[in-house]
Amino acid sequence: MKKDGKTEQAAQWLREAQHAIAFTGAGISANSGIPTFRGEGGIWKEVDPNYFNIDFFNKKPLVTWKIIKKVFYDQMTHAQPNLAHFILSIMEQQGMIKTVITQNIDHLHQDAGSKNVLELHGTYKRLICTRCNTEYDYRFADLNFLPPTCFVCRGVLKPDFVFFNEKLPATTKQQAFDEIDKTDLVLIVGTRAEVFPANSLLEKARENNARIIEINLDATEVTRQLTDLFIQGDATNVMKQLCLQLTCSNQCKCDEREKGITGSDIP
Ligand code: APR
Image (cartoon, rainbow, N blue to C red):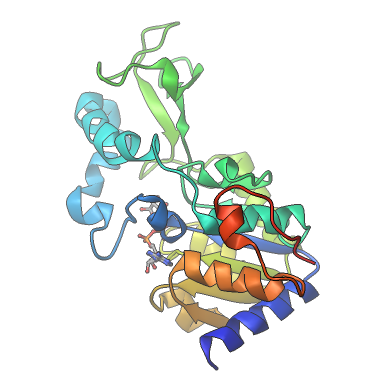
């Protein structure tokens, strides 16, 4: 089936869905200038993931914080949502997408206006004290003086995102599984879904006979094992095509939306 036939099919399935959700990974933020983790130019190609093991961080916070600042904070603090993020937020406003489950820590879904966002891996926006659990907005800390320390107990502050060997936020994880139990359509955008619980959430959706649409530059293990409709392409371009398919007769104003001017509603 040609790509625009596939986006037409995807639009039809989204219209028919009772409780569609989006499931996103680093690929949706690639066009916002945030590197993905694997593949060409991926973070794990440049940085040894062991620095992001929670036990290593607790032993040598300064070493990891220097990398965290360079790899995450120097990139994410200036990143803006791209059209794919905005379209998902419009689809939520139109009741077409109920929730976004994201593995991303970049807060770009919320910055684009999405309200129901489950951040499986946490967020860079919050810091938490490793000693007394006091929470801070990341702007509290001057990241030119590392590691940042707690105002209350002088403990070392950690970004509130999930490190390797660290448990996921229990409430968010449960909420994600609850969403999967309710959904009849998952729109996957830009993830290899190689880590837990991404993979098991999608397997669960499959067991529940949810339709699975996947948008990715390349085929993934998910494509081979779970996806019903694979749309190969750049997330921003494919989401724009999908938006055009979903929008009623008058021409979609996605470009205007991109510039932040309201456009026509999605029926
Ligand atoms: N459009 C669509 N897909 C894209 C684009 C793009 N412009 N750019 C990259 N991709 C796809 C890649 O083909 C790849 O399949 O996005 C996917 C990104 O995969 P990963 O780099 O593995 O990122 P992700 O799946 O989000 O990783 C999940 O792993 O290391 C952990 O915590 C980390 O949250 C991360 C998790």
